[in-house]
Every structure is written in C-alpha cells, then in structure tokens.
Length: 114
Length: 118
Image: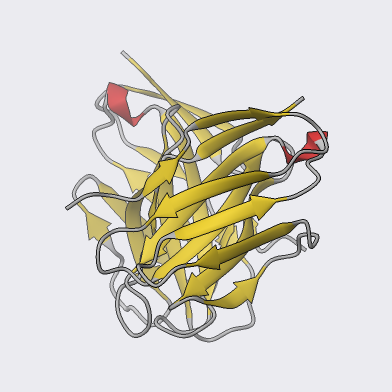
C-alpha cells in the first residue's frame, strides 16, 4: 500500500511569489491535514480537509489556503511568499471519521523563500 | 500555555540500553489521544505509538512503550534495547476530542533529539 506522497520534495521561491504544494493521501483515506515545521515555531497545524470540506483551520494568515479534490488529493497554496514561510510542510492522512487513530505523514515539501 | 512539553532538547543513550523520553501535556478534555512520532533527518514523521485517554493499559508496540500517568498528565516514551537507527527527533503529540470526531488536530511538543552511541 503506497504511503502519503508529497510533491515536490524541494522548492525554492522568491519573496512575493506564490506556491502550490500537493499531497496524495493513502488510498482510501479521506482526511488530509497540513502542518508547517520551522526551527523556531516547531510543528504547527495549518488545516484539515475531509471529503473536500475544510473542517479545521489553524492560526495562519489568509495567504495560506488549501483545497481537497474528489479523489482526496489535496493542495496547499501560499500566496505572496515571505521569508518566514521557509519551512518543511508536512501532509498527513487518515481514514476519516469513526475510524483510525494515528495520522500517517508524508516526507514533506521543503520550501525555501529567498 | 504550552499544551505539550518535552523538557529534554537532547538525549544520549548507549546502544542496547533503554531510554525514556519525557512528555507532559495539558488539556481540560476528558477524551484525548497521545501520540509519539519519530522524525529522522529525511523529514518524514513516523508513527510509533498511541495512547487513548480512556485506555487503562499502557500502550506497547515492539520496543516502544508508553508510560501513561493520567493524574500527572505525563506520557513518557520508553525505548528498550536502543539501536543506532533510533537516532532521530522524537515528538510527543496530543489530539483533543474524541477519536473519529470532526476536530482532528495534532498539537506537537518541541521534540527531543535522541542520539544512540555505538
């Protein structure tokens, strides 16, 4: 069974640009969550999607947005990039409601903003 | 206030010895879940072990066990017979609210960097 796949693995962008990250969950999983990991702030929850609906949102500015498609794949978008957005972005999937406890993570996308 | 506290930024252990990584948590929920994840230098978060707040027995998964002391709000990870491949960052995390509910958000501690010496 394939794990959570995140693309691309590495990305370098210029301040002011926008970026889209992709996450393909484990087959059959309907919930996808996104986390930002930085040395200073650690791991912080961005948002969670379930069946194409955002169920939960962390404390991030509106420049951070996401969506989920009918096949459960999810994308995260960051507009008007700032230097502080440089981070490892992790995606996690789980089966969804009333099943499963742990979230399975991908290897992450390492974003560098210059 | 921090919800998950890991007081050990770094820990060293000799190969084949046991090591305990500390984690304390803070929540007013009666139903919650506690997790430990391992993050090697590659970046992927690897699930190790889970303890539900209503579980009466301490969770065990192979060489990993979770020392759950509910009254003290602690959930320490014990790794027995350490191996060189155990060298990594270890994160304690908490999910508040019942499993399967709509509020699935993990709150992570700052992590502990474990180094296993040969």
